Each structure stands twice: as C-alpha cells, then as structure tokens.
Length: 324
Image 1 (tube, rainbow, N blue to C red):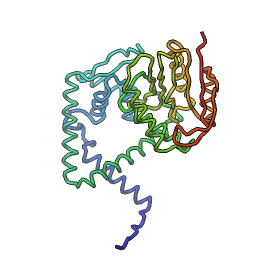
Image 2 (image 1 turned 90 degrees about the horizontal axis):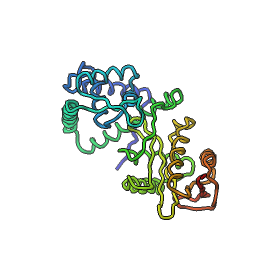
Image 3 (image 1 turned 30 degrees about the vertical axis):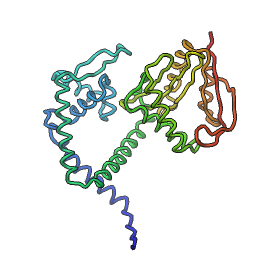
Image 4 (image 1 turned 45 degrees about the vertical axis):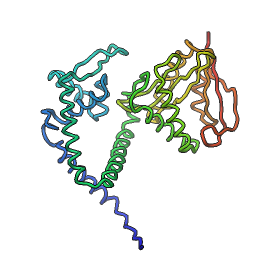
C-alpha cells in the first residue's frame, strides 16, 4: 500500500477556516437570536442559569469569570433572573458580605427545559455522523476550547492575579482531575515525572477524597469558578498524633499572589489543634517551596536518593512540631 503525505495547510488558511466554522456554530446554535433554547432569555442569562444549576451556591463574581462577562453585566443578568423568580440569593456562611446563588423551583424547571433543548440539538447533529467522527469531533473541540481558554487566562493572569480565586474546604466535583493535572504538568517539567506519578496522585487522592469527611483529615482547594487552581491536604493518624501534609500545589497564575501561604496557614492551624508532628515529602531543587515550608517551622530531617515517584530524585523529608 502506498502512503501519501498530505501537505500541511498554511496557518493563515487554518485561521480563516476556524473563524468561518466558529461563525457558523454561533449562528446554528442560536446565539445571534434575542433568546436562546426557547427560554425567553438572552444567551448570557441562559448560561448563568446553567452555571448556577451546576454549582448551587456559586457567587456572582464567579459567574462573571466563567462567562467572561464584566461584573456589572453579570450583576444585571442575575438581578433580572431574581426579578423573574428564577434565582434566589442567600448570605454566604463563610463571608456575610457575599451572596450565594441558587435556582428556585421555577429556575430548576427552566434549566431542565434548556438541557433537553440542547441535548436534542446535539443528538440530532450526531445522528448525521459515524461514531468514529463523533469521537474525533469531541477530542478536537476539547483541544480548541482549552486552547481558547488558556489564551484568555494568559492575557488576564498578570493583570488580575486571579482575583476570583477563593479557598474552600472539602471535596468539590472535578477537583481530583484538576489537582492531578496540576501535579502532572508541574512535575513533568521540573523533575521529568511521567504516567507512574500521575496515576499515583490520581488514585491516592481519589481514595483520600472518598474518605472525607473524617476526623483529623482535611482538604483545602483554591477554586476559580468550577476550576481547582490549588490544593493542600492533611492526612493524619489520630493514634500516633502524626500528620502527613500532601498534594500541596498552586497553579502558575497564582504564584506570588499569597494564596499558597494562605493554604499553609489554614493547614498549620488545623494540625496544631490535632497533632504533635507534621511531615511532608518533597525533593531537592524546589527552593521556593522549601522557603515556604521553613517559614512555617518545617526543618529538613532526611535526604536520600529515592524512586517513590517513579523517577530517581533526591527525596527530602521535612517535619514540624507545633509551638505550644
């Protein structure tokens, strides 16, 4: 069988074709109309309904971030949804100055109608494609959407330093995948870790999250909307009164913002109330992390070559005892 190399298309032509596809998608999905999904609402309001339904208790600032709206626009849309009896506000239990958003019964009913409309629309289109093309489409659109989101985040990260990021405690849907991805990318770059390490993080973090809530254990996440941009966990043994600090990581967009120190402060308050000693494992050359650990009273106790993460590195164990 002869194999023929397909000429690589020019970048300019690819851009023009993607722009045309994007315009066609916008038209066919109905985003040019005054209302979307036969809801009687404009597209931005429909998406707000979807996001509030997916994350009950979400705050208005997070809606603005997810939908790429300015805060005043997001506030107006939410006010209209409230006036229509579709959304209600409740004072946040974490901050009395903030409000949590929830769908009312009418809002839930409308969301189900929107979901059915969208599902029928996609299902009708997929029936015109063979299964292999369906999977190719899903993978390609996922890559394209992620690339667009990354470009937006890169442009705004330095100016805003992710102002909508907030620290929450406990498991949130999607956090296992997000935290695993943060670890895999960071340690692949800094230490050459591969699939063994990624699998180890995913399986052990999933088992830990499944055990929550549990006495002496805690998980803190840095959330930006529905995305997890950082994490830290305390996995302790009540019998030995020794705690293990695990899965501490911060997305690059938050480095220098003080969020990492905020996570550490919460964790140290927790371990000081429950344990006599806290330890963590890391490896040599991560100087910024080491300085942070030492600023909270951790000291190096062991150092030796090891392979517990799948690649040979100089492993380091740090430990800390609370100041009574």
